[in-house]
Length: 117
Image (tube, rainbow, N blue to C red):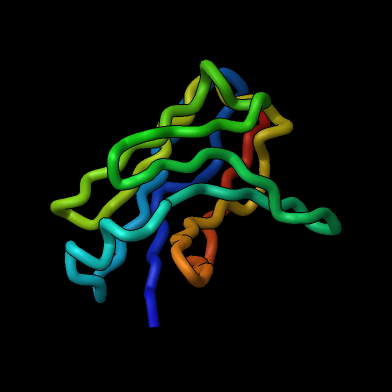
């Protein structure tokens, strides 16, 4: 079982920044490196949407809505990924999930991000 633990969510004003973290404490490094890691978000009543992904070789992919504002990064030695979110907007408000994908999909429990004045 792959355990993913997110942290870093919270309440922030529009234009502010947050940094999300996700760690995989039970994985060994070589196994972590086989996963494409990513961040997804979901608001109540809607589907879970891709925010960004990153491969073990640091190739990244972003949803158009966050390009230029969000940056995904990865530390393979620490088995962690991050999402730096700048210039946050109210429409970024959602529950953010960490994802690990190889032959199977694994999810964290989610961390809430609320952007409001």
